Image 1 (cartoon, rainbow, N blue to C red):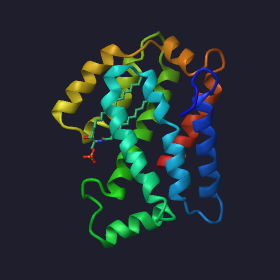
Image 2: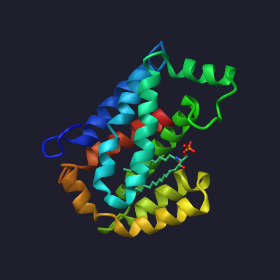
Image 3: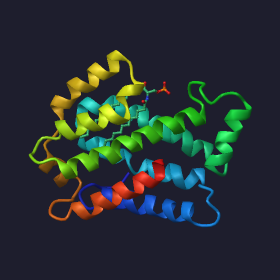
Length: 189
Ligand code: 1PZ
């Protein structure tokens, strides 16, 4: 796990997804489970910036990324990972790699929309951007109990400046944010 004091987590995420983008745009077009799950694991430190209320989101996301990292030891590409579950009729089975991949992708959607919203919203509160991102990316797939818990957690978010400071993104945060958005868009389309 990296050291938030010295590193720029958003840049590391952006670079990893930029490399995935290059692979997708190359002739091969096959995405390795290993490089995809590694890029996804770089998102995990962001949860630490959101406060204790999102601990349960972190645990869920981290467990699913870890499953994909494990899968990468025996399955080469995302395409073959999907094909295996389709053949085994386990696409929707709880805990299957494909189901976990879909959940992780929705998490990436959440991050993408969150930063888009941060860019277009003024003011110090993250409640608006975070609520909007949750509403669009995850709420349609969650039951009443989780939606209520997330709504309560929104009141315990740090303010924008705190988040930027923790991420070492103070003055020049907008470049990396924009790049991250473009890349997450590609990765999730
Ligand atoms: C300032 C930023 C505020 C961010 C607020 C983040 C709110 C996310 C709350 C998500 C709660 C998820 C609780 C667990 C849900 C599980 O039931 C489902 C289904 O899992 P399965 O049945 O297949 O085992 N899991 C999910 O929906 C995956 C959720 C991933 C959450 C990633 C959020 C990423 C946000 C990062 C923000 C930096």
